[in-house]
Length: 376
Ligand SMILES: Cc1cc2nc3c(=O)[nH]c(=O)nc-3n(C[C@H](O)[C@H](O)[C@H](O)COP(=O)(O)OP(=O)(O)OC[C@H]3O[C@@H](n4cnc5c(N)ncnc54)[C@H](O)[C@@H]3O)c2cc1C
Image (cartoon, rainbow, N blue to C red; front, side, top):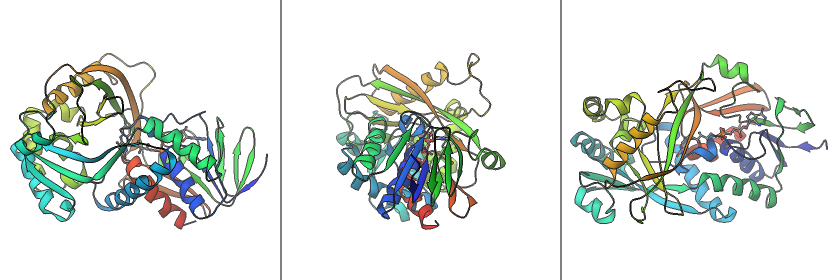
């Protein structure tokens, strides 16, 4: 088949699917070409945590808009929203100071800071050492491994997006997208290859010095069958998310963490805990440079059991101690090394290469796609 499309998207991760949605909302005929037979990249390996609180600058604005699109699209596409809101908890006095400053600042709207006792009254599973918690109503969470296939199916069935699964794109420059099997005619092309640096856009991505960071993730059973009312984060996240980490109060927390959690900082461990429909908890993560990793990991090199142990130790300090049996382990990657959270390159007047260069694609993709298509 050799048909003309208003937009051809390369890659069926969340960034590609967001561009497909933005295209059909403009009334365009859209195709998506994906080299795998289903989505298997970062977009199905993440927490599905659409994070607004703690994001800074343009990322924050994109996250607010993207959260609104998720809230609208999820029911239409049959995607369950498993959490609404998040609890950012503080164990160390310096972490409490960060939350107080955040709550009093411009992004504190929609958030409520409570002391440890009040937080535990709502979340009895929080550790007894919790001194304070910031409740934010902004977040939502979907189960990405279910949500992505549903989103793709909805785009195909309801919006007529044509998917070409299992075809690697070798050339993507409007007006043509070329695979081994076909040449698609495209008025516009957006390539969203995620972590695949070696294919289309290889030279561009290399010239920007992008690297890959590897994250370790766990699924555990809670010690008893409780229900988390929202995502839970801890002190370590306050030096990781820009909206917290850029506050002057975060420096004292960094110093405190260097003193008593240096191993977590060294392995980029910070804790996000979310719950799935079956009651299991998704817990992570860690961050290691993985750009030059081969297929065989040396002892101690990531993915490593030692890092999983660190994540589980922090879990026991964030929530009530107990037996959190591991039921699943996986890792995923995202690109880093760009000044901004997003790299948008223009290889031609009607072609864009779009890579989210931070761990925020699920939180920003819908807004980003609108911005990109506005330029085409
Ligand atoms: C463990 C982990 C946890 C995370 N947690 C969160 C979170 O909670 N919240 C959040 O907002 N973000 C999170 N992120 C980041 C987020 O998942 C990513 O930013 C996002 O998934 C990137 O989406 P993508 O579509 O660019 O990439 P991908 O999902 O990797 O998709 C890219 C697709 O392009 C395809 N492709 C590449 N080259 C070609 C080609 N030549 N031809 C055809 N197809 C091609 C690939 O096969 C792939 O399917 C997390 C990431 C990881 C790894």
